[in-house]
Image (cartoon, rainbow, N blue to C red; front, side, top):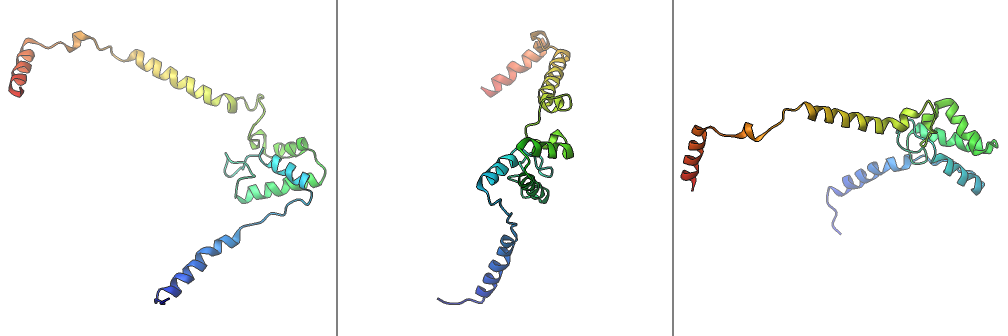
Length: 157
């Protein structure tokens, strides 16, 4: 194998570009597999407050990592699933849940999409009603225009 002058440079670049892979934070899992499974299930219920539409179990954000640690701490402390959920809801509100309950505070979360769709449909409907109607009378040609059209068609054909 021949060694080119670029080989050491390529090797150095490969080492440097692979360094971020070593920075992955490995979380301390619970020693009890049942508790860890419960923690993983609970983590799928909470929204990452940084990513917003991602569960904390999937997020790489620092806040999501901290929330995962808290879930495990609450389980070790003996909290049941509802107590862990309540812990986060008390601090962050119902919005922290990926599937928030339907109540007076969250009604707009649940009805927002349908409301926007209805408003959009109403705007289109009223806009269409106000648009001028196009009839065949508006499209009729005068005698001069008809003669000009016939002349142009004869020239083409």
